[in-house]
Image (tube, rainbow, N blue to C red; front, side, top):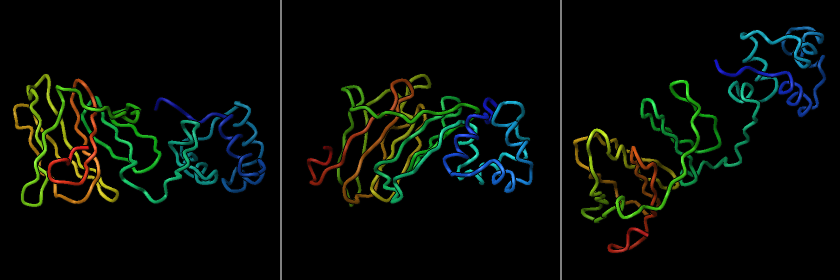
Length: 203
């Protein structure tokens, strides 16, 4: 474990909830002196107390450990405003509909910033039989390849995994507008909006 809760974090979160040391101590079945020791860095809560401490302070354990309180203001969970994370170790892809602290393989992951495609990463799209046929003329070697393509709308996120030495073509159901995402293992994340119309689908 790289981080552990600090006394400053405990105190700030406790005071934000207008809670006394004695009140917090009562929720955790410890003494108020114990809370005081934690907050003045003269002791640390046992690992078995992290979950009840986080619950008492109204946050998650990862938030408690990082010292950052995540407030999800996007209660509707519009997938078009999601954040995407890719693990550099195992390639795991994570889509978060709201603010989150994401880690994988022991690495804290930053949200990816999608770029507009350059000439080497420009998609071709055709509408056929109620589907979007998406293709990309891109190297697919073991050293340089498109790892995945995804389609995002307001209520769903569909991802198709691609593999080196395989094709770079994907089909998605034609379902309104949204965004297409694709990830190059060397150049990162790209995004392009889908528009209405059979010949102007890529906006």
